[in-house]
Length: 450
Image (cartoon, rainbow, N blue to C red):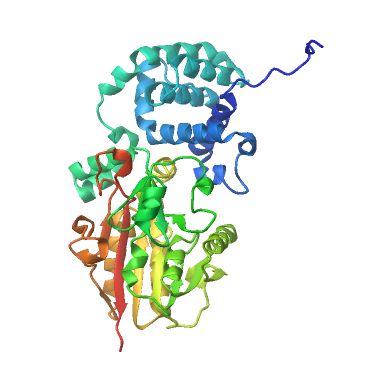
C-alpha cells in the first residue's frame, strides 16, 4: 500500500541531537542550569532516552564545544551580524552557535551544519522568522569564519573577564594565558585503577601518568569500557586523585570524608584500608556514592547530613578530608558550563562555608591527627587564603608540607608554603588532549598531640 498522505515525516538524521543540544544550551545560558543537572538524574532532558549512542555523543560534544569556545563564537557572530544576535528568540541564538561551532571545529560538512541549523529555527514559533538570517550568516561563516577567528589569535576570549582578571593578578599574565589555552582543549578520560595501572593503560589504549592515573582518549559510554562492570577502576581526574594520598598510610585508621559524594576520594581511602565515614548532604549524590562503592566492592559508612552541622563526637577521627564545595573554577576543562554559571560574588559565600567546614573538621580531629583540605577552585580565597586564616586562628594546627616524592616528583605543583596547587596548564603533552590537570588546591595540616 502507498504511504498515507497523513503520515508523519521521518525525523531528519541528526536533528534530534541538535534540538536537544539547543535546549541544553538554553538551560545553561538563560536558565542557569548546570550541564550535570540536564544530562543525568531526575532533571535530565527527557529526549535523551530516545537518542542513539552516536547522537548522544554528538550532542554532548556540540554543547561542550560551544561552552568551551563561547567567547570566540560571540566574537565571530558579532562580526557576521550587522545588528547582533537576535534577543527575542533563544532558539535562533542556539542555532547560530550550533551551526558555527560545527563549521569551525567539528567534522561536519558545512552544508549539513547550515541546513540543520535552519531546520532548528524553522521548528520554533518565535525563531522561524530568522530562518533566512541564520542561513545567510552560517553560509558566510563557512566562507569567512576561520579567517575572522585567526585575526584574534587568543583563547582568553573564552573566559569571563572577571575570572581572567583574577587569574592574571594571582598567577601572572603568562600563566593565566596558558591556563586559558589549556581550557580550550577537550580533556582526556582519567581513571583511578585498583591495581596494575600499566596493564589497564594498555587495555584502554591510554598511558599511565607519573602519579599512577590511567589517561585515555577513548570516547563513548564509560560503562561499556573494559573493567567498569568488574569494578576495576573509577573515573577521577589525575589532580583530584592526589589529595587523599597525602594522608600516607591509612590502614585501619578512622577517616571522615566530610563532602564525600560522588565518592572518588572515599573509594581511594577505602581501597587503602581506612575505616571511612562518608558524609554528604545530598541524598541523590549519596545514592550515587553507594552505587559506586557497590560496583567497586569497597565499603564505607555513608551518612546523609550537612557536614558543618553533623553532631558527631568531638576528636573522633584519625584523619579528616574536607573536599569543600567551591566555585569549581578548576574544573572548567571538564565542566565548561562553570565558566558561564559562576559569578565573582559567589566566592565570598562559598569561602564562608569552607571556613565552617574547616572549623568542624578541627573539632572532629583527634590530637595528632591529619586534616587534608582541598578544593577544585583556582581562586585564592578558597585555597591559600582559607588555610592562612585557619592557621592564624588555630594555634594547635601546623602545616605538614607536601614533599615532591609524594607527587611523583612534580615539583611545579608544590607551592613555596608546601601546599599542592595544580593548574590546567600543568603536565603538558605533545597531544594537548593528553595534557593538563584540573585546577586543585590541597593543604595538609596536623593537630598538636597535647
